[in-house]
Length: 411
Image 1 (cartoon, helix red, strand yellow):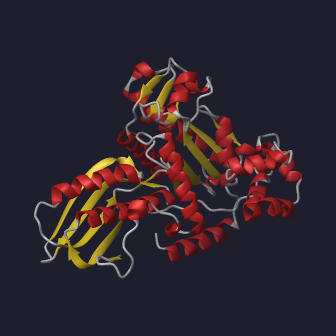
Image 2 (cartoon, helix red, strand yellow; image 1 turned 60 degrees about the vertical axis):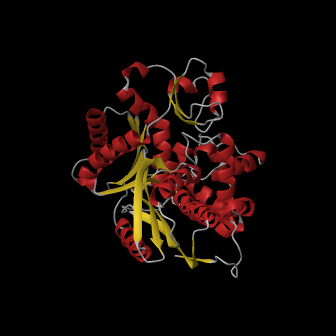
C-alpha cells in the first residue's frame, strides 16, 4: 500500500476515533498448526504433537498443549523437545494447508467485521467501534467466535478491550479456546499482576534488563516514571511503559497484501560466466529474502527471468511451500536456472521475482532449516536492520569492484 495513503488513512481513522469509544478485538487461532493437522488426522487428538523439521537439528514450529506440559515450546531445538517429550508425535508440517485454513478464517471475519487487520497467519485485529449501539460488542464477538469454530473446526480465542495491546494480552489470558473482556477503565488493574513477559515488545534482552532491575510484574512498571524507562531502554522503554499502563492509540488498519517483489540485474558486458551468474542470483535472493523477513512475509511462487544478448527474454516459475528462507529459495532458483538456460548464449539480464505473498512472521524456514542456520540468519537480519543490508553479507555475494569486468547494475 502507498505510504502516503497509509499516512492519510491513519490520520483519518485517528480523527474518527476521537469521537467514539473504541472496541478492539484481538483473535488468535490456538496452536494453529497443530489444530489444522488434527482436522486432517483425528488420531492426533489429545496426544502430544510436535510440528517442525524431522531431524535432530530441526526446530519446533508449533506444539500441542499436551507437549507443552513437558516444557516444550515453539522455536526449541527438535532434539531437546523429543528428549523432554519422547512420546510426542512428530509431524512435518504443510504450510499450504495452514495458509488455506488461515484464509478461510480471514474470509469469515471480513464478511462481518467493518475493519480487519491480519497481523499474521493466525492472528487478526478487528475494530468494531460503534457497533455496540446496534448489537453489543461482547455479544457480537462471541457470536463471531462461535461461527469460526463451527465453520472451520478450529479452536480460537478472543480478547476485547479499548486498544490493541490490552486485547492481545487478554487473548493470551483467555487461552485455550476462550474469550476475555477488559472493560474501559480497567486496563491498568487487569495488567498489574501479570508478568512483564506478557507485554508485546518485551523480548529476551529487555526482559533480562528489567529483571536485573528487580522488575517482574507489570504493576512495578506502572509505578515507574516514563523518564526512567527512557534512560534504561531508550524509546523502546517509553513504548513498553505506555503498554504497561494500558495506553495504546494505534489504529486497526486494513491493508492490501503486496502482490510481489522482484530484483533484476543488467550486466555491463553480456556474459556466460557461470560463477558470476550464480553469485548474482544468490545475491539477489539474499536481498529479497531479507526483505520478506523484514516485512514478515512469505512467498509461495518463485520466478526466474533471463534475457539474452539478442534481447530474447524467457521466464519460468515454480510454486513452493511458503517460505522466506534464502537457503530454500536459492535451491529453487538454481533448479529453475538449470531448466531455463539450455543454450550457450550470452546473458544480458537476469532477474528473480517472489509472488503469491502472504503474511508470516517466521525468521527462517522452520520446517527445513537447522537451529544453527536460524540463529545465523536472525543474527544477520538484526545487524542489517540496524546498520543496513550492505553492512554484512555472505562471502559468495561479494563480486568484483565497480571497475571489474562484469560489474552489474541492479534494479
